Length: 51
Image 1 (cartoon, rainbow, N blue to C red):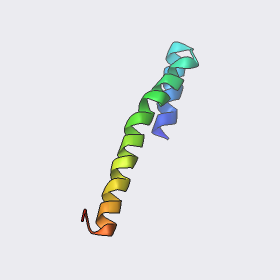
Image 2 (cartoon, rainbow, N blue to C red):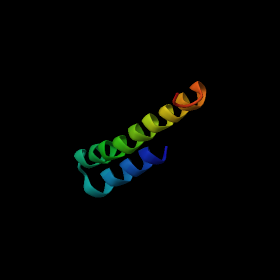
Image 3 (cartoon, rainbow, N blue to C red):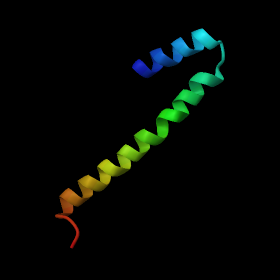
């Protein structure tokens, strides 16, 4: 919900539909990387670690 409010506020300030889209694109890589790291840690925990 905070992301939507932030994007709407940015649109209200700049009146550009491109700027909130760029903010969304900037937020994607860290979230994706965190998902990869978390899933790797979960996999290691479930299998007992490297053999």
